[in-house]
Length: 371
Ligand SMILES: [Mg+2]
Image (cartoon, rainbow, N blue to C red; front, side, top):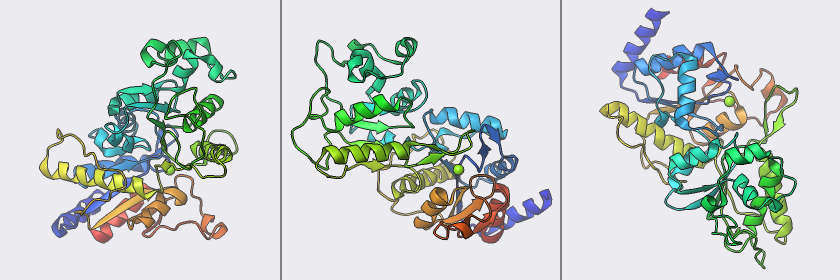
């Protein structure tokens, strides 16, 4: 096997064909908290051969560096992944730090999404729990304990919420991850969308499809798999609730919003920039350069790649998004896709390159064919 691989990569190098790979994480590299064994050989081989690749996930809620460290350890990679090689659902929001000063960051475990937003460079990061601490009457049915409020929220003097009845306007709402206290998150978001210029405790007097504060959802995943026997609602379900109530309270006008994540073009554009940036790092050997900050919704002007392969386990996000973006797509059998799914649902997006038992089979077949 080793010999076959080496022979294959000699051919690959002689041809100077430029390939890039984009990997989904859950169901491709990891299953739950555990490594998918074939992923280790795949990424080690690509790293050794300097074939550019990045990871692209709809997950999030933690720092890119923490996620990379976790995956590198789980897969026992020879060299650890770099933070600039991963795009989580909310990673593109880092490009907005100069546009929005005071932001409400919603969702994610404990208070970790605040740290992520601060790491991106947002200067004033509020969480719904800060607003509850300043004035619990904002949602009397909240489920936070006193200890959680003490540990996870800012004092009103720091958050500048409801200090002597005064508030500073909030510039933007960013849903980083699935809400954990959905009732309070929901009420506070609706308040701001219908406020006077983002001021808490105010209500505008007109209906509009443009909310008073822009809102960005980091993914549109309706369902996610847990240990429960049926899939559970995710951020996509929360978005439907926000949209429905916004429409209800705005004379039927539809909420203008931005949604990131797979399968949307905005996220594939961003990932494409990141993959090109990483390719240039590999070429120059300079990894100290700050990572690229592409404008959202702007595709790269040109790409050095002859082919980019999206490798995923979910036809509805990875494969649909990759196909729409004119990338080649590889579907694996180690995650949500099961044989027979295409027969059951003929509308499911099919991979352009093929369906494989695991990530290694798919990637090595691609290298063999095109490299
Ligand atoms: Mg997946």
